[in-house]
Image (cartoon, rainbow, N blue to C red):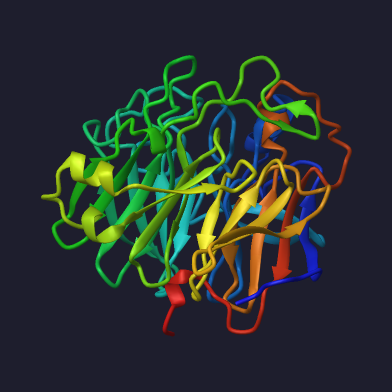
Amino acid sequence: MPYSTNRYQMVFHWNRLDWSFPDVQLQREFEDNQFWKKAMPAGVKVDRQGRYYVSVPRWAEGIPATMNRIVLKDGRPVLQAFPSWSWNEAGQVKALQSVLGYEIDENNRMWLLDQGKIAYAPSPEGSQKIIVWDLDTDRMLDCIIIPDEIAPYRTSFLNDLVVDNQNGFVYITDSGSGWPDHPVEGGIIIYNMKTRTLRRVLDRHFSTQDFPGFQFSIDNKPVYRDTPLRTGADGLALSADRSTLYYCPVTGRNLYAVDTSILRNFQASSADISRAVRSLGSKRTTTDGMHADNQGNVFYTMLEGKGVGIYSPAIPAFREFVSDDWMLWVDGVAFDQQGSIIFNSNRLHEMFGGYEIDWSNPFNLIIWKAFVGPGVKSYLYAGK
Protein backbone atom coordinates (compact mmCIF):
# COMPACT_ATOMS: atom_id res chain seq x y z
CA MET A 1 0.00 0.00 0.00
CA PRO A 2 1.57 3.34 -1.01
CA TYR A 3 1.75 5.65 1.99
CA SER A 4 2.34 9.37 1.77
CA THR A 5 1.43 12.11 4.21
CA ASN A 6 2.00 15.65 5.26
CA ARG A 7 -0.64 15.24 7.93
CA TYR A 8 1.34 15.11 11.12
CA GLN A 9 0.98 17.03 14.37
CA MET A 10 2.34 17.44 17.87
CA VAL A 11 0.12 15.77 20.47
CA PHE A 12 2.11 16.69 23.59
CA HIS A 13 5.33 18.62 24.09
CA TRP A 14 7.53 19.61 27.03
CA ASN A 15 10.64 21.62 27.77
CA ARG A 16 11.28 18.93 30.47
CA LEU A 17 9.22 16.17 32.03
CA ASP A 18 7.17 16.68 35.15
CA TRP A 19 5.06 14.37 37.31
CA SER A 20 1.87 14.58 39.32
CA PHE A 21 3.72 13.79 42.55
CA PRO A 22 2.03 12.00 45.47
CA ASP A 23 3.85 14.12 48.07
CA VAL A 24 5.80 17.35 48.38
CA GLN A 25 9.00 15.68 49.58
CA LEU A 26 9.39 13.55 46.44
CA GLN A 27 8.76 16.57 44.26
CA ARG A 28 11.29 18.67 46.19
CA GLU A 29 14.01 15.99 45.76
CA PHE A 30 13.26 15.80 42.05
CA GLU A 31 13.51 19.57 41.64
CA ASP A 32 16.41 20.31 43.98
CA ASN A 33 18.62 17.61 42.45
CA GLN A 34 17.54 18.48 38.91
CA PHE A 35 16.80 14.82 38.23
CA TRP A 36 14.61 15.99 35.34
CA LYS A 37 17.78 16.56 33.30
CA LYS A 38 17.98 12.77 32.77
CA ALA A 39 14.22 12.09 32.63
CA MET A 40 13.72 10.99 29.04
CA PRO A 41 10.43 9.77 27.53
CA ALA A 42 11.15 6.58 25.58
CA GLY A 43 8.34 4.35 24.28
CA VAL A 44 4.89 5.87 23.74
CA LYS A 45 1.67 3.89 23.20
CA VAL A 46 -2.10 4.30 23.30
CA ASP A 47 -4.57 1.84 24.81
CA ARG A 48 -8.07 0.88 23.69
CA GLN A 49 -9.54 3.79 25.65
CA GLY A 50 -7.25 6.30 23.92
CA ARG A 51 -5.04 6.88 26.97
CA TYR A 52 -1.37 7.67 26.32
CA TYR A 53 1.48 5.93 28.14
CA VAL A 54 5.19 6.66 28.19
CA SER A 55 8.15 4.79 29.65
CA VAL A 56 10.99 6.72 31.30
CA PRO A 57 13.95 4.36 31.78
CA ARG A 58 16.06 4.78 34.91
CA TRP A 59 19.40 5.28 33.17
CA ALA A 60 20.27 7.73 35.95
CA GLU A 61 19.27 8.10 39.58
CA GLY A 62 16.20 10.05 40.63
CA ILE A 63 13.59 9.07 38.02
CA PRO A 64 10.32 9.19 40.02
CA ALA A 65 8.43 6.54 38.01
CA THR A 66 9.61 4.45 35.08
CA MET A 67 6.13 3.62 33.70
CA ASN A 68 3.57 6.36 33.33
CA ARG A 69 0.25 7.48 31.97
CA ILE A 70 0.01 11.01 30.54
CA VAL A 71 -2.66 13.14 32.25
CA LEU A 72 -3.59 16.80 32.01
CA LYS A 73 -3.06 18.99 35.06
CA ASP A 74 -4.15 22.62 34.78
CA GLY A 75 -4.20 22.12 31.03
CA ARG A 76 -0.63 20.83 30.72
CA PRO A 77 0.54 17.24 30.25
CA VAL A 78 2.22 15.61 33.26
CA LEU A 79 3.11 12.03 34.08
CA GLN A 80 1.24 9.84 36.54
CA ALA A 81 2.95 6.69 37.81
CA PHE A 82 1.42 3.55 36.31
CA PRO A 83 -0.01 1.25 37.52
CA SER A 84 0.75 3.03 40.82
CA TRP A 85 3.57 4.72 42.71
CA SER A 86 4.26 1.57 44.73
CA TRP A 87 4.64 -0.40 41.50
CA ASN A 88 7.43 2.02 40.53
CA GLU A 89 9.47 1.85 43.74
CA ALA A 90 13.20 1.93 42.94
CA GLY A 91 15.15 -0.79 44.72
CA GLN A 92 12.13 -3.07 45.10
CA VAL A 93 12.88 -5.92 42.67
CA LYS A 94 9.25 -7.04 42.48
CA ALA A 95 8.26 -3.55 41.34
CA LEU A 96 9.15 -1.93 38.00
CA GLN A 97 12.78 -0.82 38.05
CA SER A 98 13.52 0.46 34.55
CA VAL A 99 11.14 0.07 31.64
CA LEU A 100 12.19 0.98 28.11
CA GLY A 101 10.21 -1.33 25.81
CA TYR A 102 6.63 -2.47 26.29
CA GLU A 103 3.62 -3.50 24.21
CA ILE A 104 -0.16 -3.16 24.44
CA ASP A 105 -1.63 -6.20 22.71
CA GLU A 106 -4.92 -6.77 20.90
CA ASN A 107 -6.50 -7.90 24.18
CA ASN A 108 -5.69 -4.57 25.86
CA ARG A 109 -2.98 -6.17 27.97
CA MET A 110 0.28 -4.37 28.61
CA TRP A 111 3.51 -6.38 28.41
CA LEU A 112 6.13 -4.47 30.40
CA LEU A 113 9.79 -5.36 29.84
CA ASP A 114 11.75 -4.46 32.97
CA GLN A 115 15.47 -3.95 32.35
CA GLY A 116 16.01 -4.41 36.08
CA LYS A 117 19.06 -2.17 36.28
CA ILE A 118 19.19 1.40 37.54
CA ALA A 119 21.92 3.81 36.40
CA TYR A 120 23.70 0.92 34.65
CA ALA A 121 24.38 -1.03 37.83
CA PRO A 122 24.06 -4.83 37.47
CA SER A 123 20.44 -6.04 37.52
CA PRO A 124 19.57 -7.49 40.95
CA GLU A 125 18.29 -11.06 40.88
CA GLY A 126 14.57 -11.12 40.13
CA SER A 127 14.48 -7.58 38.74
CA GLN A 128 14.67 -8.53 35.04
CA LYS A 129 11.15 -9.54 34.10
CA ILE A 130 8.04 -9.21 31.99
CA ILE A 131 4.96 -7.98 33.81
CA VAL A 132 1.65 -8.63 32.05
CA TRP A 133 -1.00 -6.11 33.13
CA ASP A 134 -4.70 -6.21 32.21
CA LEU A 135 -5.71 -2.62 31.36
CA ASP A 136 -9.43 -3.50 31.47
CA THR A 137 -9.42 -4.90 35.01
CA ASP A 138 -6.31 -3.00 36.22
CA ARG A 139 -4.52 -6.03 37.65
CA MET A 140 -1.39 -8.08 37.08
CA LEU A 141 -1.93 -11.27 35.11
CA ASP A 142 1.59 -12.66 35.06
CA CYS A 143 5.23 -12.10 35.96
CA ILE A 144 7.96 -13.82 33.95
CA ILE A 145 11.43 -13.60 35.53
CA ILE A 146 14.35 -13.35 33.09
CA PRO A 147 17.38 -14.98 34.78
CA ASP A 148 21.09 -14.30 34.47
CA GLU A 149 21.73 -17.24 32.12
CA ILE A 150 19.26 -15.75 29.62
CA ALA A 151 20.15 -12.06 30.06
CA PRO A 152 23.40 -11.61 32.04
CA TYR A 153 22.79 -9.24 34.94
CA ARG A 154 25.96 -7.26 34.25
CA THR A 155 25.86 -6.84 30.45
CA SER A 156 22.16 -7.11 29.58
CA PHE A 157 20.19 -4.15 28.27
CA LEU A 158 16.68 -5.48 27.63
CA ASN A 159 15.41 -3.15 24.96
CA ASP A 160 12.12 -4.01 23.28
CA LEU A 161 9.59 -6.81 22.82
CA VAL A 162 6.88 -7.94 20.41
CA VAL A 163 4.00 -10.27 21.25
CA ASP A 164 2.59 -13.15 19.22
CA ASN A 165 -0.56 -14.35 20.97
CA GLN A 166 -1.56 -16.44 17.96
CA ASN A 167 1.39 -18.80 18.34
CA GLY A 168 2.13 -18.08 22.00
CA PHE A 169 5.57 -16.42 21.83
CA VAL A 170 7.27 -13.19 22.86
CA TYR A 171 10.48 -11.92 21.22
CA ILE A 172 12.91 -9.57 22.98
CA THR A 173 15.99 -7.65 21.89
CA ASP A 174 18.90 -7.51 24.33
CA SER A 175 21.21 -4.72 23.17
CA GLY A 176 23.98 -6.11 25.36
CA SER A 177 25.16 -2.59 26.23
CA GLY A 178 24.40 -2.63 29.95
CA TRP A 179 28.05 -2.45 30.98
CA PRO A 180 29.62 0.85 29.89
CA ASP A 181 33.12 0.65 28.39
CA HIS A 182 32.68 -3.11 27.88
CA PRO A 183 32.23 -4.92 24.54
CA VAL A 184 28.61 -5.23 23.41
CA GLU A 185 26.97 -8.62 23.98
CA GLY A 186 23.73 -8.45 22.00
CA GLY A 187 21.18 -11.19 21.39
CA ILE A 188 17.54 -12.18 20.89
CA ILE A 189 15.44 -13.74 23.68
CA ILE A 190 12.38 -15.89 22.99
CA TYR A 191 9.65 -16.71 25.50
CA ASN A 192 7.32 -19.65 24.96
CA MET A 193 4.00 -18.81 26.67
CA LYS A 194 2.81 -22.42 26.74
CA THR A 195 5.89 -24.04 28.27
CA ARG A 196 6.92 -20.86 30.16
CA THR A 197 10.50 -21.32 28.99
CA LEU A 198 13.04 -18.81 27.70
CA ARG A 199 15.84 -19.19 25.19
CA ARG A 200 18.62 -16.84 24.10
CA VAL A 201 19.67 -17.00 20.45
CA LEU A 202 21.99 -15.10 18.11
CA ASP A 203 24.16 -14.26 21.09
CA ARG A 204 26.92 -11.91 19.88
CA HIS A 205 25.94 -12.74 16.28
CA PHE A 206 27.03 -10.05 13.82
CA SER A 207 23.40 -9.02 13.31
CA THR A 208 22.81 -8.39 17.02
CA GLN A 209 26.08 -6.51 17.57
CA ASP A 210 27.11 -2.94 16.92
CA PHE A 211 28.76 -2.50 13.52
CA PRO A 212 32.56 -2.36 14.09
CA GLY A 213 33.85 1.19 14.31
CA PHE A 214 30.46 2.69 13.44
CA GLN A 215 29.92 6.36 14.24
CA PHE A 216 27.15 8.71 13.21
CA SER A 217 26.00 12.29 13.57
CA ILE A 218 22.71 14.15 13.77
CA ASP A 219 22.74 17.70 12.37
CA ASN A 220 26.51 17.34 12.03
CA LYS A 221 26.86 16.77 15.79
CA PRO A 222 28.59 13.46 16.60
CA VAL A 223 26.27 11.22 18.61
CA TYR A 224 27.83 10.97 22.08
CA ARG A 225 30.46 13.67 21.90
CA ASP A 226 33.23 12.03 23.93
CA THR A 227 32.71 8.28 23.41
CA PRO A 228 30.92 6.88 20.33
CA LEU A 229 27.63 5.15 21.10
CA ARG A 230 27.75 1.35 20.81
CA THR A 231 24.42 -0.49 20.94
CA GLY A 232 23.47 -3.94 19.64
CA ALA A 233 20.04 -5.36 18.75
CA ASP A 234 17.50 -2.66 19.49
CA GLY A 235 14.63 -2.00 17.06
CA LEU A 236 12.22 -4.93 16.76
CA ALA A 237 9.12 -5.66 14.66
CA LEU A 238 6.96 -8.72 14.02
CA SER A 239 5.28 -9.10 10.64
CA ALA A 240 1.49 -9.09 10.44
CA ASP A 241 1.41 -12.79 9.55
CA ARG A 242 3.77 -13.51 12.50
CA SER A 243 6.20 -15.28 10.15
CA THR A 244 9.11 -12.81 10.18
CA LEU A 245 11.00 -11.09 12.96
CA TYR A 246 12.77 -7.87 11.94
CA TYR A 247 15.49 -6.27 14.05
CA CYS A 248 18.40 -3.88 13.87
CA PRO A 249 21.17 -2.34 15.99
CA VAL A 250 21.32 1.39 16.69
CA THR A 251 24.97 1.62 15.69
CA GLY A 252 24.52 0.34 12.16
CA ARG A 253 22.09 0.95 9.30
CA ASN A 254 21.21 -2.55 8.14
CA LEU A 255 17.85 -4.23 8.75
CA TYR A 256 17.90 -7.97 9.53
CA ALA A 257 15.19 -10.61 9.44
CA VAL A 258 14.73 -14.22 10.50
CA ASP A 259 11.80 -16.61 10.09
CA THR A 260 9.94 -17.11 13.34
CA SER A 261 9.32 -20.78 12.52
CA ILE A 262 12.93 -21.59 13.37
CA LEU A 263 12.88 -19.33 16.46
CA ARG A 264 9.76 -21.10 17.78
CA ASN A 265 11.57 -24.44 17.51
CA PHE A 266 13.61 -24.59 20.70
CA GLN A 267 15.34 -27.71 19.33
CA ALA A 268 16.81 -25.78 16.40
CA SER A 269 20.58 -25.44 16.72
CA SER A 270 22.35 -22.13 17.16
CA ALA A 271 24.14 -22.75 13.86
CA ASP A 272 20.86 -23.29 11.99
CA ILE A 273 19.38 -20.10 13.46
CA SER A 274 22.52 -18.16 12.57
CA ARG A 275 22.29 -19.37 8.96
CA ALA A 276 18.62 -18.34 8.81
CA VAL A 277 19.41 -14.64 9.37
CA ARG A 278 18.86 -12.47 6.30
CA SER A 279 20.32 -9.02 5.74
CA LEU A 280 17.70 -6.86 4.01
CA GLY A 281 20.09 -4.02 3.27
CA SER A 282 20.65 -0.49 4.45
CA LYS A 283 17.85 1.80 5.65
CA ARG A 284 20.23 4.68 4.90
CA THR A 285 19.71 5.84 8.46
CA THR A 286 20.31 4.63 11.97
CA THR A 287 17.17 3.42 13.76
CA ASP A 288 15.95 3.09 17.32
CA GLY A 289 12.34 1.83 17.45
CA MET A 290 10.31 -0.14 14.89
CA HIS A 291 6.74 -1.39 14.57
CA ALA A 292 4.97 -3.41 11.86
CA ASP A 293 1.48 -2.59 10.63
CA ASN A 294 -1.39 -4.96 9.81
CA GLN A 295 -0.66 -4.84 6.08
CA GLY A 296 2.89 -6.16 5.94
CA ASN A 297 4.92 -2.95 6.25
CA VAL A 298 7.52 -2.04 8.87
CA PHE A 299 7.78 1.52 10.21
CA TYR A 300 11.20 2.46 11.57
CA THR A 301 12.50 5.59 13.26
CA MET A 302 15.11 7.61 11.37
CA LEU A 303 17.72 9.08 13.68
CA GLU A 304 19.93 10.64 11.04
CA GLY A 305 16.90 11.39 8.86
CA LYS A 306 14.92 12.92 11.75
CA GLY A 307 11.62 11.16 11.21
CA VAL A 308 9.99 7.82 10.41
CA GLY A 309 10.53 5.57 7.41
CA ILE A 310 8.76 2.53 5.93
CA TYR A 311 10.13 -0.78 4.73
CA SER A 312 7.78 -2.54 2.31
CA PRO A 313 8.95 -6.16 1.91
CA ALA A 314 6.70 -6.78 -1.11
CA ILE A 315 8.68 -4.29 -3.23
CA PRO A 316 11.19 -4.40 -1.33
CA ALA A 317 12.13 -0.82 -0.57
CA PHE A 318 13.06 1.61 2.19
CA ARG A 319 11.59 5.10 2.00
CA GLU A 320 10.89 8.13 4.10
CA PHE A 321 7.36 8.56 5.49
CA VAL A 322 7.61 11.74 7.54
CA SER A 323 10.45 14.05 8.62
CA ASP A 324 10.76 17.32 10.52
CA ASP A 325 13.67 19.29 11.96
CA TRP A 326 12.06 19.02 15.41
CA MET A 327 12.10 15.22 15.27
CA LEU A 328 15.40 14.95 17.12
CA TRP A 329 16.04 11.31 18.05
CA VAL A 330 12.75 9.65 17.21
CA ASP A 331 12.74 6.85 19.76
CA GLY A 332 9.60 4.69 19.62
CA VAL A 333 6.83 4.24 17.07
CA ALA A 334 3.42 2.57 17.56
CA PHE A 335 -0.15 2.70 16.23
CA ASP A 336 -3.33 4.20 17.65
CA GLN A 337 -5.55 1.69 15.75
CA GLN A 338 -7.37 4.69 14.23
CA GLY A 339 -5.20 4.94 11.13
CA SER A 340 -2.26 6.88 12.60
CA ILE A 341 1.19 6.18 13.94
CA ILE A 342 2.31 7.80 17.18
CA PHE A 343 5.96 8.41 17.96
CA ASN A 344 8.17 10.56 20.14
CA SER A 345 11.34 12.59 19.84
CA ASN A 346 13.46 13.02 22.97
CA ARG A 347 16.94 14.35 22.12
CA LEU A 348 18.53 11.24 23.68
CA HIS A 349 21.83 11.94 21.92
CA GLU A 350 22.05 15.33 23.61
CA MET A 351 20.60 14.41 27.00
CA PHE A 352 23.01 11.50 27.51
CA GLY A 353 25.71 12.43 25.01
CA GLY A 354 27.49 15.29 26.72
CA TYR A 355 25.72 18.23 25.08
CA GLU A 356 24.02 21.20 26.68
CA ILE A 357 20.26 21.51 26.23
CA ASP A 358 18.26 24.72 26.32
CA TRP A 359 15.76 23.66 28.98
CA SER A 360 13.51 26.64 28.25
CA ASN A 361 12.72 25.28 24.77
CA PRO A 362 9.08 24.07 24.88
CA PHE A 363 9.75 21.53 22.11
CA ASN A 364 12.63 19.56 23.65
CA LEU A 365 10.42 16.49 24.12
CA ILE A 366 7.56 15.81 21.73
CA ILE A 367 4.92 13.14 21.10
CA TRP A 368 3.75 13.15 17.48
CA LYS A 369 0.87 11.69 15.49
CA ALA A 370 0.87 11.13 11.71
CA PHE A 371 -2.07 9.81 9.71
CA VAL A 372 -1.22 6.77 7.59
CA GLY A 373 -4.52 5.61 6.13
CA PRO A 374 -7.94 4.22 7.00
CA GLY A 375 -7.81 0.71 8.42
CA VAL A 376 -4.09 0.85 9.18
CA LYS A 377 -3.36 -0.66 12.58
CA SER A 378 -0.63 -2.49 14.48
CA TYR A 379 0.55 -5.95 13.39
CA LEU A 380 -1.40 -7.21 16.42
CA TYR A 381 -4.68 -6.43 14.64
CA ALA A 382 -3.99 -8.25 11.37
CA GLY A 383 -7.19 -9.98 10.27
CA LYS A 384 -9.28 -8.08 12.84
